Amino acid sequence: MNGTLACAIVERRVRGTAARFFNRRYAVGFPAVPACTDAAPRALYLHVPFCESLCPFCSFNSVGFAPELGARYFAALRKEMERYRELGYSFDVLHIGGGTPTVLPAEVAEIVSYAGRLWPVREVSVETNPNHLTDAVLGTLRDAGVHRLSVGVQSFDDELLARLGRREAYGAGGQIRGALERAAGKGLVLNVDLMFAVPGQTLEMLQRDVATILRLPVDQVTFYPFMAPGAGGNPSASGTARLFEAVSEGLAGAFHPATAWSFSRRADLVDEYIAVRDEYAGLGAGAFGLLKGRMLTNVFAVPRYLEALEAGRLPVVAERVFTRRDRMRYTLLMRLFRGSVRKEDLGRGAPPWELVLLGRLGVVSASPEGYALTERGRIAAVLGMRAFFTAVNGWRAACRALVPGDGVVARGSRR
Image (cartoon, rainbow, N blue to C red; front, side, top):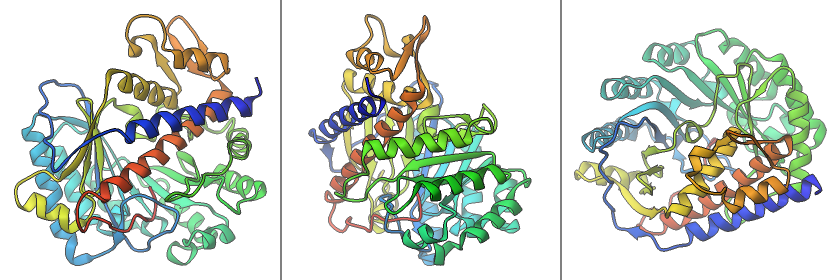
């Protein structure tokens, strides 16, 4: 079968399945977070929604930076962390995103140290922007125990940066390259986030971005496909696939695939916290997590988030319960996003029909241990994850409508 057609089928299947899941009935009105009675390692995501500049392409929960709310917000985050510890949860992987968490580097450093006092955290990643790659910020984060920085660059092309609303806020391509060069060798793993299949982006623009990454002393690069905000349509599967092929071919030999859309110079570096742990808690305004078969979503507006925790209750505004089949499909998607799925991950019996279909499409190859993505499968996984995150964006919009005053701006500096 034609590779582009196979990838389009995968994207359509994931989009339909995710839409049906998120459109089902869900509990609202501050549902309870289930207690934890096991010792399984989990990931912790902390959301800091503050941004210096709001970009039009991002659907993640973000608001303009309000310094007067900073200390109060991080105090609320610590209260939320304490409640999860009281419920019995333990975390060994921490990811802090936004928004742009490093608008308040001292607060980020303190929350990292606090997490280390609560749990056996061994891996810490923080999202940032190029203008925060200063010696002072890098030193503060490194000394607090941060291991990895994920830098929102999106592109090195000045025309595209201007179109994305980032050139004025975060600098031109040359300035960004200089900031990354100066940040290298400072004791932190550097990941660069870039986008492809952006409206107006040519193949030549993308190839120049790939060539720039090859010259920079960074440890990892993540190429996200453009995801249209709101109800806008995503670029075609065929066009997206052709551009991703250019990325993969350009990076081959210098970078190893870490996830479907992430590439590392070392084989042991992985970008996504949702790919390294089966369950994760999402704390902070507008965060969501997956715990005990439930997708839990926090209230979005910062004032509502603060009110809930200052009143002594967790700020969860909605939950969706996974059926056994939901969980199998989610596990399959996330495992294949990482590159392979073991038979034991899917339970006993014959492989699910989804895997049979993926095999016939040439997306996975079978082995005695399980199934692995083919090269065609990597492109299909990128499109499948784009479909999943697009459905998540719709879920976010539905959750914002549940609480009066929660219809906050859904644009941010980066994921």
